[in-house]
Image 1 (cartoon, rainbow, N blue to C red):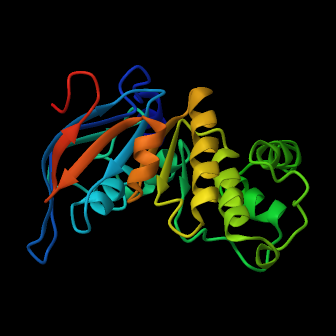
Image 2: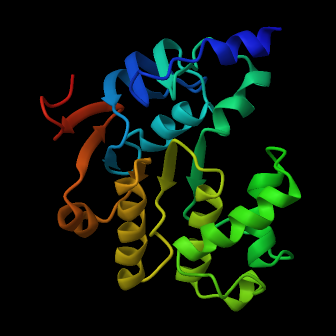
Length: 240
């Protein structure tokens, strides 16, 4: 079957993310991404920075296959997103965890069920859920909050639930889109420290941020976008 063949042909020894000559222009005529070439290798922690309108959101949407490039090739976790059909997108999404700025917790579900939801959508068994959800909550320091409702938590705690949800399926890649945007400065450092610890265990982290203090203090690779182009990259060898 096509799906099985697609999975078999997944390339595991390539960079986690690779853009080759990628451009994206919207129907409005906006050139959001222009001729981007970039490689992000397994196990890297990368900050993505740039002013409003620089192309950060489109860059992330291309990686998650929410948008499709007009030209060039986008490879993520061994999948060719340029050739990917819509019904193959869930396979890609299962290899990544996503942390949002606005938490996106389900208010009628407790913490355990919010994290478990990410497992249920990929068909995990109840046994797996009972085993993995407490471990994920423990990793983010919320082992005692499993039965709490989102409204009972602080903003920082809600973001930790979001991080546990992103972690629970053991993804190859975590995409964090302004994860500290709605928490106080101290909690911002805690969130990035947690992401750094997760990264040390081998998970690739891609984080969009406007917080230059975090970028300065955590000393990870930084990719800067401006007008849809990569204008700086402090990886060894710089931007391609």
